[in-house]
Length: 403
Image (cartoon, rainbow, N blue to C red):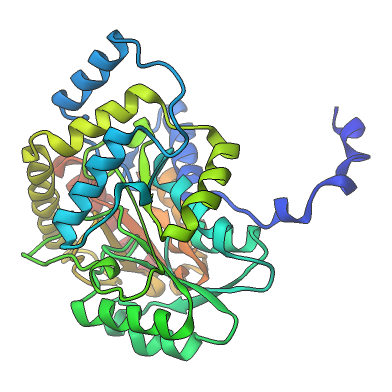
């Protein structure tokens, strides 16, 4: 089969080599392989809520199925869901969103993909946070654009500041991508950050793509600020979804709020990609938005308790530095001292931690080149598992530093 395929290799598009996949899923596969061999592994690598989808949302899906909601819908989604999203976004952000500017997608990932593919042409520059969600860089390159990384650093709290962004803007800048609360660093943009970034994008004539999938997972009483609240021009694309706040990762339901001029071209792209999201899942989404929000508040409170417990346990671990995450459910840990001692990359370290110590974390380089020297811990797990996982990290690093 391989020999027969080789003669067709020259026919593959160069574009297919520019796109990458999420490292978290590759690490999860390695951890599962170790478990299949009998290894006990604590999972802190994957960014997925460990909670079940709330019962009222599941019931809404089952009721929709029972009523025959198993068919195609309009590509942008059913009107009832688009209206519910527009109403929720408008109320949360203090803006007036027209429901016809809401496009329902198969997960937030599709919203990101379709947004970038709809606005980026060959040679266009896209500024994005690095470390950051890998799709920003990957899809920009796939679209023929030039990814322009903005290096996030511990010194400024892993924030994407207007001053730093302004230094990267050129006459080729087509879009600026922001993510707050941030994956993998857990940082949250301040009000002045968001306002400044809106002004820069408007002055540059660029789109501002705001990935808000981790809203409202915020700690210590912090507030969320969206560029949609400050925009004077019709250039903001808000992407979001149901996966994180409603524990609906497997349901694959997201959305984008887009400028009026993007509605038609982006709808055509979505139509060619997936036709439409599942009909019964869209009815579950309506219930998620309009039903009780107690489960969301409970999950956020639980994440905050877990974060605090992890931070306390990390005080016992040698050779690392870290910042207190302000949102999402990740902690980005500087392990450069450990890596320099053992002569490893962060990816090699992750493999060793799985095989020798039974703890799975994510290598920082999977989140971009500037993530090298770090590991990401997800605290979307029980406190018992998290404390055991940190204990295993502590034993591993102590052993490596004493070599």
